[in-house]
Image 1 (cartoon, protein in one colour):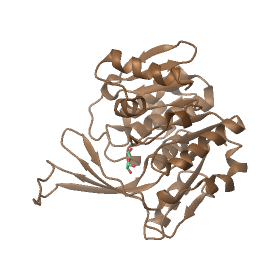
Image 2 (cartoon, protein in one colour; image 1 turned 120 degrees about the vertical axis):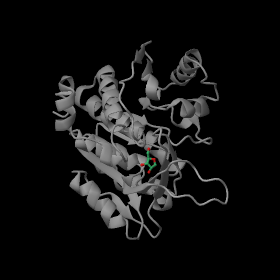
Image 3 (cartoon, rainbow, N blue to C red; image 1 turned 135 degrees about the vertical axis):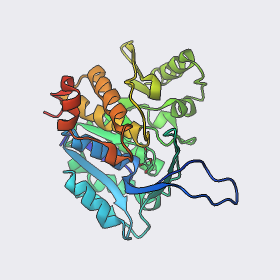
Image 4 (cartoon, rainbow, N blue to C red; image 1 turned 30 degrees about the vertical axis):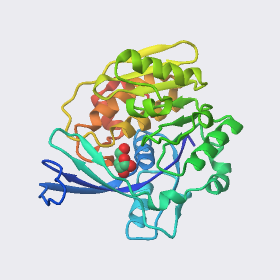
Length: 310
Ligand code: RIB
């Protein structure tokens, strides 16, 4: 097994709007799409489509969404033994995408709130067989901390995507991660530092690295990505310019691709380069998981990444 994703799943309810309604106002939106989402699930699906063997530890509810979510994981080749049903609603995410492709997201975590430290214990033997643990912040923080400890205790590198930004996240409890991959907002919240300029961003990333995180990779949207590592590496990765239609889930595409290339090659710079391209490609299509192409399609567009799923 390559990757264990310990994280969320949601049902994405995406309205393509012309503008946000004012208070008390009802407006019509021209289009709507429903799809499988959630940061954990998105990252798992992107990785699986790119050729990684993925185990998913997550909780669905006891409603009409649950079986569809499980079936979606299954048909993408993900190990579904640890997708647990709970006496709660499934996680749902109303999403609003404007004509400039900007998105606003509300998450109702539902069953994701019940993913527990005990669930990690129950899956421990199988998680131990993975080469990388991937985490986000749509499950209880205590479960995230336990997963970071589990990785450290078992010598498994952990990648934390601290999204959505969480003011109460304690850096001390996640600094053992091999990778922390925030966007600028998340970086600022994690460090308490400003991110208003390139220098600010570098200083904040350096503070995370100096706290003990081995690799800090800041995703900068249209400005590419920045990597700082314990060995003094400091590298900027330029953006891949595309015509964006829907940026929802682009960060998850980045993580799923990065995780896959990293476990297949061990080459962090190559993994960031591939992830930059994969995330950029995803914004040219509507939806979250619906915008993630598979390894064959990706390497047809970018033959230089042909070895990534081997
Ligand atoms: O990162 C995008 C995801 O955030 C969406 O799929 C939505 O479910 C929320 O979790």
